[in-house]
Image (cartoon, rainbow over all chains, first blue to last red; front, side, top):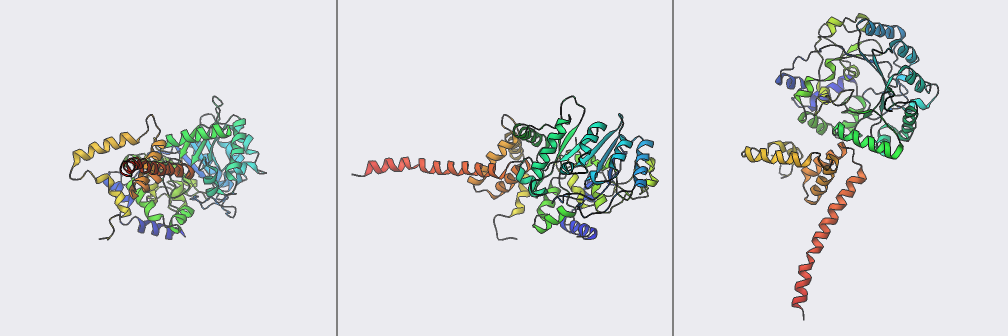
Length: 333
Length: 111
């Protein structure tokens, strides 16, 4: 499905109950940003996996990769405007040949730098080296582990991905990640392995902690529980499996104005491999650039004009505002 | 209007069951919320109990709601099926234990 078809399908599915109108009803439309506390950089759509829930449609066949000039524009913007958090994602960020350069340029004691890793990439040459690079630079690792049941994780991510992920989690633990007082942060990401929403983050974190510790001797800091956004591969799964209508109805019924008020795009800016700016990674995958006269390329980064920008919304935004809310860092607090 | 008494979308009407009796409805939801949220038992354990009850009571709304709740809370397929078997075993046992009356009457009446 191309982007136009996806947007059209989502509009048709919500059946007139538009996200924009929900925001209107709780005095949040137009939704405006309140700052840029997080710059999320999607540096490549290439990945060694092709997970069924992936909103990026990432795979080994993707070729999009950020060039050095764009990367340098991002680094300059972060430093000039003292953006406190940089969230590096993909695809598999490790497959970008300049990731080490990017991390060395960004890491400093007053900045939080995190990399979203699929873990299994760190078992392979030439990317194994990042285990030590992350630890040396104090990079926060945000690791995808959709479920603590092997069968569910493998169903989403591929055969034996769960057991290979555990091997890397052990390697990270050995280097101090997730261990008390080490200062090395290892957070895990839960995504439902099907057409349902995640339960309470607190309850899931307790189960993850118990299973991973008791069965595999693995420790971690926090669990981020994410709602799957109905975009790209996951949208196609919902549609093909005849789950789309009910999934969207569930999201619509669970719309929570308090979550909408604190939704992550209000303090996040997302930059794509080609330097274009988006309100979030989901909008990036749907080609919905920042708009309403805010600068839309990182080369023209202008904090004053971006920090109060009007946010582009569409029907997929229901996913971030359901129940306790959902963001790239889990439930909204 | 559909000819079926049970419609999937009726589950969405559950929050409105206090209509026409709001005071009793509120009391019910307060109680329902307190009984099903985490306490001495976890939310996960309570969802499994609810699923077992839902199947024994043949409530399609509750089966839908609590299968989803169990999935959301990371309950495995095997754990859910075991909970249903507990419900099934209880129903079988409850049925069979009532044969006591039957057997007593038989013994009373037969020569």
